[in-house]
Image (cartoon, rainbow, N blue to C red; front, side, top):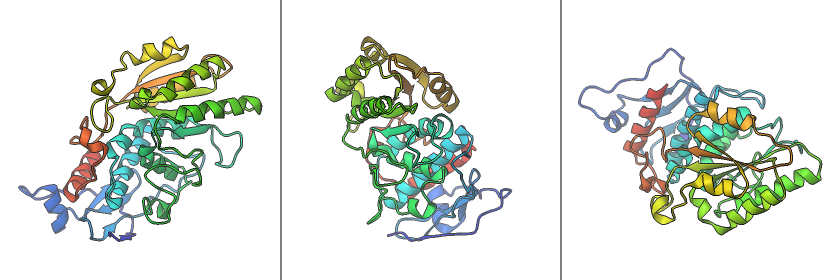
Length: 335
């Protein structure tokens, strides 16, 4: 098992070392030519070591507060870096699914959600119905200061609350999810509870497009319309993929927007990798009693890492040492 140790933070002016000509990233990382990749956004450093070797990861210098968050695009990039780091360290998959929603999560936790404290009963509620992408959510909770760096480094470890799927016992998590197709039903219940308690809180639920194959989703869709749950906002991660194939080959639901609209929902189609557009649309929704809202976010599975994008195998595969090095290199180039 890899050992995690903390290194001193690098000065922001330091540059990422470039491997010598003819030497690939994995070889450079192994030999030390690329000893440390600097993460500009949080001044984090990460040694590009292989499995079973020591992985050096410095705690971020963000010192995040509940009312302070990175600009949404920077936050989305940092979420992606954390996904790569932690999935590699824990040797787990679901990487493509997590990368797909990084911008959505950044928009929600950076701008949209009204959550001053995880303990505030009137806080907005968020449900990650596609629970297998929980690593993106954990990254955002860390950037908000609700999960410590030490806790994050225990992702998928024995005794940790940070598993592949979220558990409500963890601070910042309102609902345990993982069994697909159930999150919207939970959200309907939470939205009804807010009404009965005369609370102005809103309920956001993030589903995958493949979840819309589940009959339970459409039962919840009908009930939400019947109850005029305008305080309910569903966001669909429309990346066109699911575990074993592309969604249009398994059960083609196009045109998806027309289906939701036919059930009486207020529909919006947005670029799922534009967090500013996502936030703008969600902030303008009328959450008084009336039609519930659905935001169909057009995304790319594995977004940000070229060899993962639109590739079915990255629903489950873990990263090799060479792939991790390449992924971090590509994300560094974005900045």
